[in-house]
Image (cartoon, rainbow over all chains, first blue to last red; front, side, top):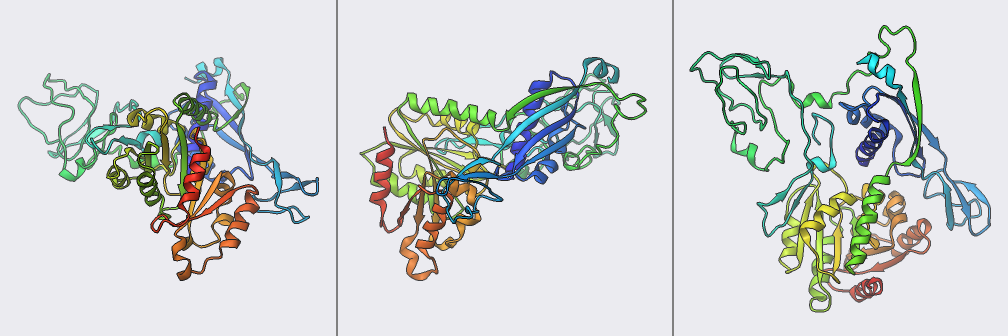
Length: 118
Length: 349
């Protein structure tokens, strides 16, 4: 359910940056360890964008795999989920990637096109 | 959630001082455009709002089938109260906030419409356009939760400036959060002033229980929301007005999933789980247990009656969060509470 609040936050941020111009595409990075389900964000996106300059925009989601540094054996390992262990058996992992939850880019229509469309 | 515009969270959130339950600080306000929507009236005629329609003189029509607090003009110069036409008494049970309204029968622009996923396929920019419109890429690289984190930082500064220890208590429903708070307030009475923010989707039940202890308390009802966020807490604090030097205990919405993601500006996050829930909770809800500064294992007085492996539970919690402290206790019987009070004392000041 928190994906709804997350998606609203995305839409508000995008609105704040696009200066009223219509948005063509929003690109998000959602890490596998972020606790946010990409499909749920997709589901909420259409709902949250209604009546905003983001309405009708495409949503691109980049998946960021989980990685961690093992403090026990001092190696970098893939981390498919938060409960995975290092192959050495240690749980003492410093997560280095995969917790991302970020708006990467926003594609907006240039001002002339926005005027032409309206 | 307001299904007309898709807004959520703040829109349905209410902050209530249980001492004055009639004074509800509602959610945010927003304007709804309703131009051109139709109301069907009991007498069968339909008119489009804002189109300057005429009524023949002297006729009456019944608005009792719907409920709205916006104004609309009539061409014949008569006017009527915009907040008219309440339906049944049950429609009025919860006071709507500004901008909230409900339409019932006969409104062909019902709120259901907002829930429908609209067609996204062909928009004016592609329909019939020969050339692809020029676009420009804005690089944001902005954290999605930046807005919440900013609010949390504001709250954190607010607490620090008043020498207040704020603790965010999270758990599944029924783990004993409110019981632990009642007991803590009673046991530390005279030693440390406490104030409580209660978060629940609905009801003032928990706030009433805390109020009975004599502590200051404010209830935040999140409506459809599944967690407290930094802004809701800030609004709650404005009503709570905790005294400088006190402890503010924040009882989050009972949920082991969503509250883990939202920093409120607290000094520490405490996850409470009870032995009746099963020892598998840490691995089932890893985000929550990873975020915890302390895990309270409640209802240990029931251990003889349930199949719960304390060692496994602690080992699993530490698999996610190697340094996390775990305090087994019973809020009803009192076992282990001294360690909890020591923990609070150690985080104080």
